[in-house]
Image 1 (spheres, rainbow, N blue to C red):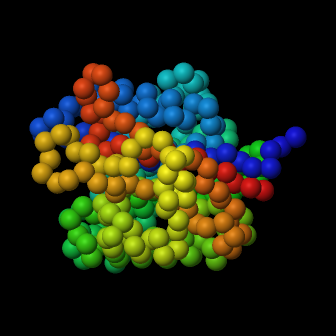
Image 2: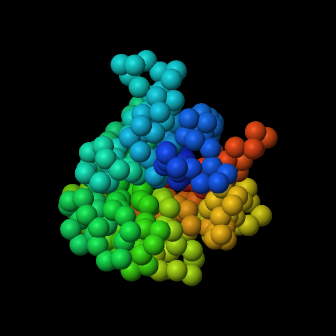
Image 3: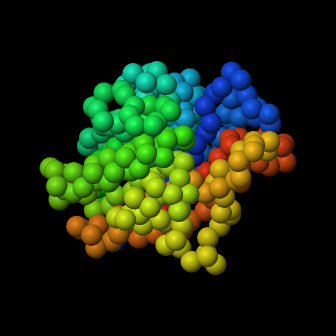
Amino acid sequence: MLSETTPIRVLTHNIRYATSSPFQGERPWAERKQLLVNELEYETRHCGESFICLQEVLHNQLGDVLAGLNQDADAKTPEWEYIGVGRDDGHEAGEYSPIFYRPSFWELKHWETVWLSKTPDIPSKSWDASSIRIVTIGVFTHRASGNTVLAMNTHLDDQGSRSRLEAARIIAGKISEYSQNKFAKLISGTFLAGDFNSEENQEAYQELTKSLLDTYKEVDGSRRYGNYITWTGFGHDKEPASRIDYVLVRPAGTQGQKLKVVGYAALGNQFDDGVLCSDHRAVVVDLALSK
């Protein structure tokens, strides 16, 4: 007998791109990658319906993460696949904001990359953005229950306040578009994960939470796990640590939405070895999607 709800775990983590010029306190990707793969494996092991949303992923890092997640799987039938492209050329150049998923649990119905600019169909940047920015969007149907979710992953600009605001408006517009297009009657759950480079009192967060719920606030403080801060730096940064990484969801009852927030955690990013696996902490959110 099928359960009345589909459990979904969403993990979002800015893994810090594989730079050739590390900051003080930062270790090379070669020393960090296994720590991150171990985190992703452990946190998704017992929920087949997990989605992994990463930011600042260069093509070589994408290959390392995918190989790590699939190391115990048959090469012909990988356990994990992904959607996403490099933001600089729409292929492999520049940072990805990929969404990883298990195809044995989710059927990919549609996906696209949208550039957060005045020309969203081509690699580009606008306003005061310092870098090209994207949102990765996927429509996934749960094979067992038939539930369909709209999954989104983004990384907003770290310099341009105007570009963050306009990017948030583009993302909100895409959510509205999917609530009216051919997938509208299928989608019963929507989430947006990512590094917004925006604190609660700033532009992108304020714009996006006009229509989306912050999962952190949907879980009682006595029931949350881990940290509040999500951006820590590498221990020698001038900027104060802050919460800028989020998982947001459309409210239940809105146009057939049926997602309930069950749990929230912000994980540690440094352990006994002293290596910071990234300058961000992973955020892990448990959701339940009713039939």
